[in-house]
Structures are given as C-alpha cells and as structure tokens.
Image (cartoon, rainbow, N blue to C red; front, side):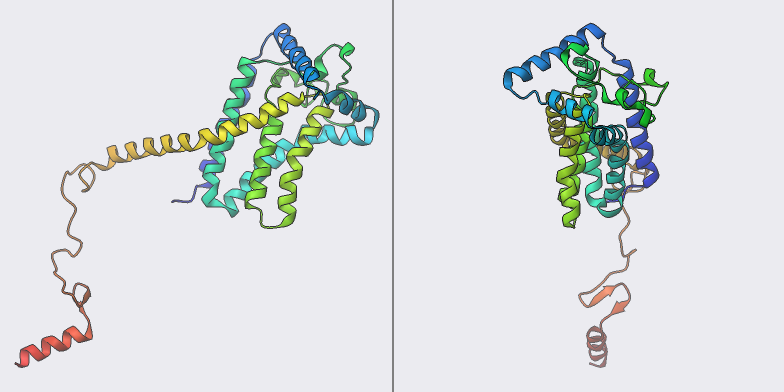
Length: 294
C-alpha cells in the first residue's frame, strides 16, 4: 500500500476539523431545551447514584493547585495530544495510520450528530442553586480563557457552549489512549495510554464542563466510530477503484486503446533454461554445443 502523503493528510484533517467546528456553530440548540437536557441527565445520574460531578467540582474550586492545572489541561491537551498522536502514527506506524485516522474522523462526525440531536447545558452553566462552579471563569485570571468554556477572551461567540453531549474531550483522549497502548513499545507509553483518558474524564467533570454520562457517551461514540471506520474505508477504496477503472480503461491495455497488453518478452521465446530472453544458463549452452557437434 502506498504511504500516505503528509501534505494530503494535513489538508484532509484540516478540512474535516473545519467542517466539525463550523458544524458545532450551526447546530446550536436553544437555551431552554439545552437546560432541560442537562437537568434530565443530572436527575438520571442521581437515580443511578453516579453523580460524581459535584464533589469533584467542589474539590477543584476549593483547591486552586488542582483547579488551575485542570483548567489548563481542559483548554489545551486535546489540541496538542491528539495531533501529536496522529503525527506519531504517521511516522512510526504508517501501516496502521490510515485505519486509525478513519476511526477518529468517523467518531468525530458522529459526535456532531449528537450535538445536533441533543444540545446539552453543561453543569457550569446551570443555575448556581444546582451547586456547580465554572472553574474556567473562577480561575480565568490565570489563563487566556474567559467565562465561555475554553475559548480565548472575546471569542466566546465562536464556540457552541451547548455541545456537551457527547464529550469529545473524553472520546479523543480514549482514541489516543488506545493508540498508545496498542502501538507504544515502552511501558511509559502504555501507562500514558491508560492514564490520559482517565485524567481527561476527571478533568471534564471537575471543571464542570461535562457530566459523567457525557463522558460515557464520548466513549460510546468512539466505539461506534471504530465499527463504522472499516466500512467507510472500503467505500472510499471502491470509489477510488471505480475512478481508476474509468480513466485507465477496462480491457487491461493502455488507457483508452482497448488493445490487449503486449507480450512481456516482446516476441522473444524462452526455454526452460532461460531467465530472460537471450540469457541462457551454462548448462543449456553446453547442450546446444553438444547437439551442434552431433
């Protein structure tokens, strides 16, 4: 299989990311329905006894030594680690890169479907009576972000704050973790493969940017993307094959001529002792000499 070209991959990833970012902005839900969905998730977690967001958020708010690094992690790591793992795979595991990239893209587009169907108000935007503190706003003096998610100050309008379900922070981190665990050769890389998605899950809840069920949905989207990616790759390969057949002809000859392919030997015949036309083994040459003498 031909190795992917770096410039083509960079362009493709840029186009998909731009479409994803633009799609997030286009599918903004109304505030009332987003709040209703957020409260419904919170009630369901309470019934299941898995509402871990509040204690984590209180801890991160009360202990700046935890909250500030968590805010930096939320605002930066998914922009840094995911591309770094893609580049690492491209350079070190080119045979696995294409399938891994297709998996990531399929899951990301599925996440966009989730944002469209279920706009969700994150815990940090709920009324203060629900007990959550927006740590990004609380500690904004220490970073470049303002009070609108992880967007830089003044650019809050460029993000969809109700794109919380599923959590692609967690989904992308899980993808990175699987890649590091599967293809990393050192114990350190494998340990990072386990730690990174777990750390990300804690961070998105402690900063009040996501519910636990958002994180679960992020993992589910990655699972669906994993199942979908092989089918997407086969469809792309079929399209390429069809395009190649159209331009290259269907009879096996030169493009557009309809002629049969030429004989490889160009009309020269070979015998059992020959490797290429005109090149005989020493034994065959000796047999010809003996036959001529007779």
